Length: 151
Image 1 (cartoon, rainbow, N blue to C red):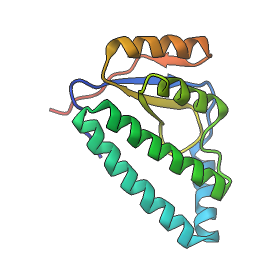
Image 2: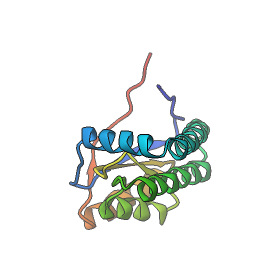
Image 3: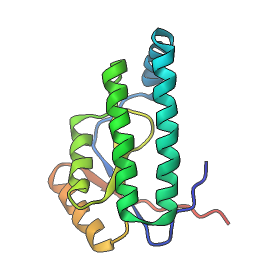
């Protein structure tokens, strides 16, 4: 669903150089759902709720709320990994998120799983620049992206 980002929030994306085919993740997720449907549904409900909190945080442009909402989502993806056996976060993606967290920047993986990109939401351009430099030093490529505005 389209989300209106607050004007003071900068989107920073890092590419880890690793990727997983979405079709493989979808097959594994379906197998997890068939194996333990109640556990699957409970986790999906928690992810949906965390996503709504995340969207509200993005719209408020409150760096602390965005950070906390991203952390909550990341914890749920780690749980999904533990409970299903699906690789959601590679070591490099974990590092990308940890580096951003050191600045208090909310960061989450893109998409549903796999570990290829992390998305950071920063309200201070100087911190975004420092984060990009830290990512480069750690073999993570900052991508030159922007946000499309629907008019």
